[in-house]
Length: 200
Image 1 (cartoon, one colour):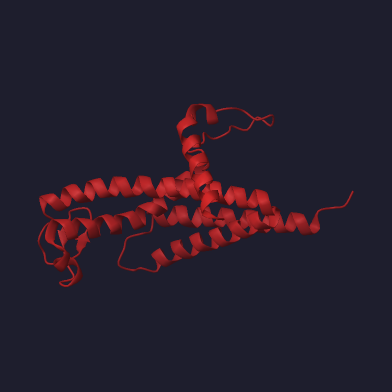
Image 2: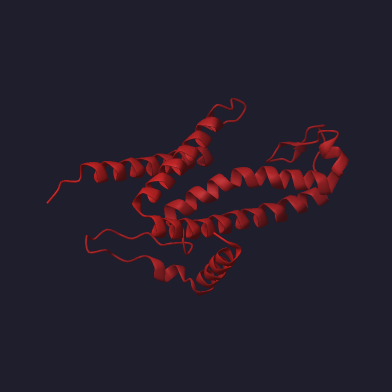
């Protein structure tokens, strides 16, 4: 995609966001009497939104912590002294002290801002992927599902291998594993249906 195409997609995405009404996007019954989940964003369904929210929070927390230490305790403390937040809940630093009030403020603002930006960026990427799939067909959709699902599974499994975190029932790895399994299953099901679809 060239710069002009990307600019057009971004304008389309902004228009979709401006005109989007979550209440009108769901809560309706299909002919098969199955309840349709509300779509929280223009290009992300409810399931994809939840996975995005949980998984992005993992990376946003690290970035927000880094900004909090840099602004609250200096660039040198973070990059040269190795100062880090070791207890996220209580804002305890690696030197045993607590995060400064300025760091507290930066952490809160950065967490919400980066989280919203990550979710919005994912919705935009979903629009781009939908356009690519519409242009190149079913096999592209299958490839995206398999690659995305495998990445989520690897991410969730990697978190569980970190023995220093109590991740057993944490929603971040669980959502990654469930979302990844669903994507891989749908990708494989698509291949199966394409290969073994009975001929009329």
